[in-house]
Image 1 (cartoon, rainbow, N blue to C red):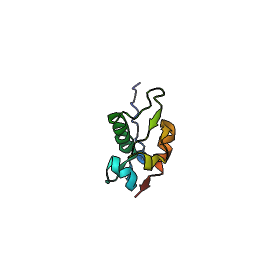
Image 2 (image 1 turned 135 degrees about the vertical axis):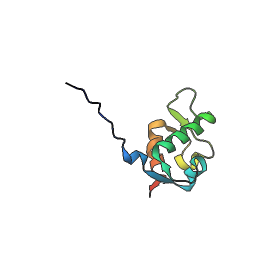
Image 3 (image 1 turned 180 degrees about the horizontal axis):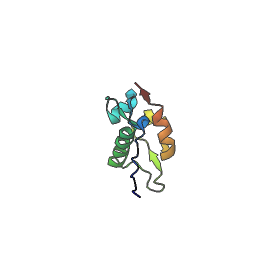
Image 4 (image 1 turned 60 degrees about the horizontal axis):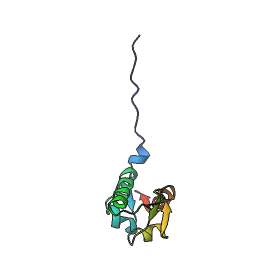
Length: 91
């Protein structure tokens, strides 16, 4: 009896290139890229600019570049994903 390794297929929906809105392009660039890369770039920006709330790290404080995307001064990380999705268009 031999055991077969199950090959996991990647979810192509996450790898499909999306185009960021003009507001989001300020942070992630204008080139179409997968949602996973958009998320990585946003988090890199948040960490580089120390925008996580020091008391509740789940909250993200908007700076001048994030405020047009979030439309408010603070969002939680779960809400952020939903908001960012509204700034992405599929090809």
